[in-house]
Length: 276
Image (cartoon, rainbow, N blue to C red; front, top):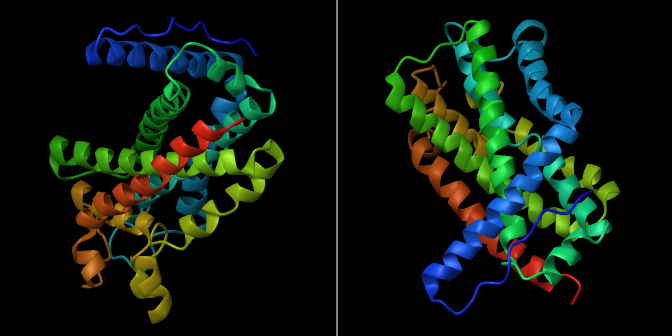
C-alpha cells in the first residue's frame, strides 16, 4: 500500500492558516482513499451490486411492501435506499483495521499533518461512494417501476436524510473498527447491521406485524428515515398513526444527530489514543 504525500506542518499563522492546512491534509487523505477504488474495482463493484441484488430479489422473488395498498414497489424502493445506507460499512471497517494492522495509521500520526485528517479522508471517500450507490439504486428503482411524485426539492430533501443516516452509521463503523482492531473481527461486528436493518419497516409495514414488534420497529432509526423518505418522495408509507410515524421526518434528523453526537467524539478520542 502506498502512502499518500503529506503536507508540512502548519505554521503559527493564525486560525485561517490552520484551517487551510487541515483542509489540505484531509483532501490528501481523501485522494488516498479514492485511489484505492482504481486499484480495487471488484470491491467497489460488489458494494454497488449487493443492494441492487437485494432490491431485485425482494421485488420479484420474496415480495416486499406487504400490507400497503397499490404498487408495493413504491413502498419497497425508498426502504431499500435507507437500508443501503447501512450496508457497505464493512469496506470502511476493513480499511481502518487493515491500516491499523499494517501500521499505516501510526505512520501517518508520526508525520507533520493534522491528526484528524485520516478520519476525515476516510469518511469523505465513504460519503462519495454512498452518493454513487444512491444514484445506482435510484436508477434500478426507476427500471422496476418506482417513481417519486413530490418534485425535485422534496427528492433532494430525501437524499439529504439518507446521506445523514449514512454519515451517522459511518462513525459507528469507524469506532467499532478501531475497537475491533483486526480485519477478522469485522465480519462479527458487521453481523450487527443485519438485525438493525431487518428489524425495520424497510420491507413490511409495522401494522402487518405483532403489536409489540411493530412498536419496536417504528422506533428504529432506519424506520424513521425510511418513513420520512417515503413521505418526501410521495410514496405510500403504511402510516400507523403512532407518534413515531407522524413525526418521522423529525426523528430522521434527531436519530442520526444523536448517533453522531455519541460516536464521532468516541472515534476521535480513540484515534488520538492509538499507540499511546
